[in-house]
Length: 468
Ligand SMILES: Nc1ncnc2c1ncn2[C@@H]1O[C@H](COP(=O)(O)OP(=O)(O)OP(=O)(O)O)[C@@H](O)[C@H]1O
Ligand SMILES: [Mg+2]
Ligand SMILES: [Zn+2]
Image 1 (cartoon, rainbow, N blue to C red):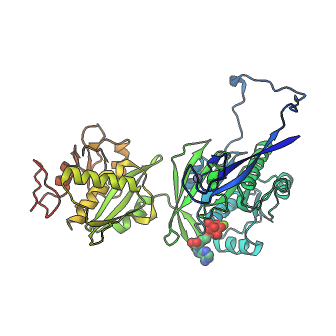
Image 2 (cartoon, protein in one colour; image 1 turned 60 degrees about the vertical axis):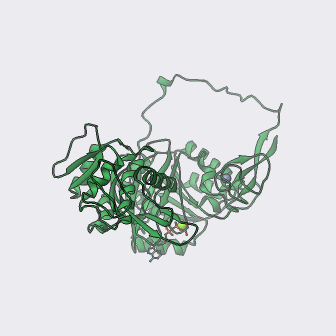
Image 3 (tube, rainbow, N blue to C red; image 1 turned 90 degrees about the vertical axis):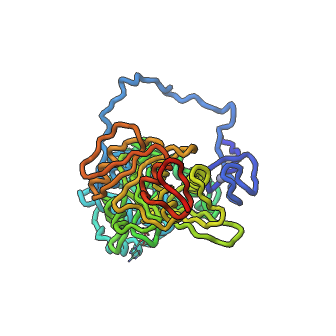
C-alpha cells in the first residue's frame, strides 16, 4: 500500500521545498517550482522480505567486474573515466542544438561497428530524421536499432528483449511512466523514469545514456533534477555558431569529474580534437592589445587558451562588465586588485572579456593572464609575442603558485611559445626553448610584460613602470 507525499522541486536547480513559491529559495529562479510526488509505504505495512539481506565482507566482493567498453574516441573515453561501464546510467546535458544527439550517434556507431548492438530510443525525432543525421555523419550501421517511443514500459521492455551493448534514450524529458501523473518533462516523470532506467541498467548490466535538455523554460525539468540519481553527468558545451564543443564531466562515480573532451562540429557531425591547444591558438599568432595566452589545466590536460579583453570608455552611468568563458566574479576580483594595487581606474569603462573558441576557463591559474590582457588593452599595448601567462592572483596583488606548472610549461613549449611569466618559487623544470620569468606580484608581472613606460593606469613603485 502506498501513500504519496508531495514536495516541490525546482526544474532549474533540482532544489526541494515543502511549499510552493513563485521563486525558488535555492537558485532564485522564478516560476520553476513543480509538484513532485514521493511514494512512501504507509506506516505499519512494511513487510519483511522473505530472504533477509546479508552483509558480506568488503574484501570478499569480486573485483573482476566486466571491463569498460572503450570507444574509438579517446576524447570520449577520458570523460567517461576510461570507457563505458556496464550497467551505468550516464546523463548528457546540453542546450538545444549543441549536438547531443550527434555525439550519441557517433558513440552508437562506434560500438555497432564492432558487431555490437545499440538501441537508440528517440522520443523527439522521427526515424527519418535520425536516419538522415546518421547518413550525413557516416554512421549508418546495421547494428543500430531504432525505437521511436515515449512510453517507459515499452522502452524498458525493448531494452530487456534486445539486451544491447548500449541503450540511448533521447531525451529523458520525452519519456512518460504511465504509473505517475504529470506530463512528459515534469519533475515527477523525469525523476521516476530515470530512477527506473537506473534500476534496469543495474539489473541487466546494460549501460544507458540519457539525453537531458537544458532549457530556460520552467515547465520542463532540466538535467539538474537528475544529477543525484545517475552515475555520471556530462555536459556538452559550446557556442552553436562556432565549431568547438566541450564535453565536461560534472559528476562521475567511475572516474574523475574534472576531465573534458574536445570535439569540433562540422557538416559530417563531430570529430574529436586530441590537440585542442593547436586549434585554440591558431587565431592568436599575431599579438594584439588585449590578448593574452594562458595555460589552464582541464582535468589531467593542460590547455592553451586565448583571453581577449576590451576596455572601452563610456559616458553611461552604468558601466558594463561582460565575461564570456570566465566567471564574472573572477573578473570583478581581478579588476578590484588592479584598481586597488596598481591604481587603475575602470569606473568609467565598459569591460568585455572573452575566451576564444567558446571555451570556458574555470581555473584561478588564468587570473594573471586575465589581468595582463586588461592592462594590455587599457594601454593599447600588445603583450610580447609568444608569451604564456600562468598564475593565480591573491587579493594583496601577490601572484600565487599553481599546480602542475611543469606540464603547463611543456604544453606551451610544445606549441611554439617562447616566453612564460610564472609565479616565483616552486621547483618546476623548465622546458628548453622557453624563456621563463618568475614574478611575485602583479606589479612585477606588469613591468616584466611591458618593459617600457605605459601611458595610463599603473604607477608601480620600484617596478620600473612609470605613468604620465
Ligand atoms: N547539415 C547539417 N544539418 C543539420 N545540422 C547540422 C548540419 N551540419 C552541422 N550541423 C550541426 O548539428 C547541430 C544539431 O545537432 P544535434 O541535433 O545533435 O543537437 P542536439 O543537441 O541533439 O539538439 P536538440 O536539442 O534539437 O535535440 C546543429 O546545431 C549544427 O551545429
Ligand atoms: Mg537531439
Ligand atoms: Zn532552483
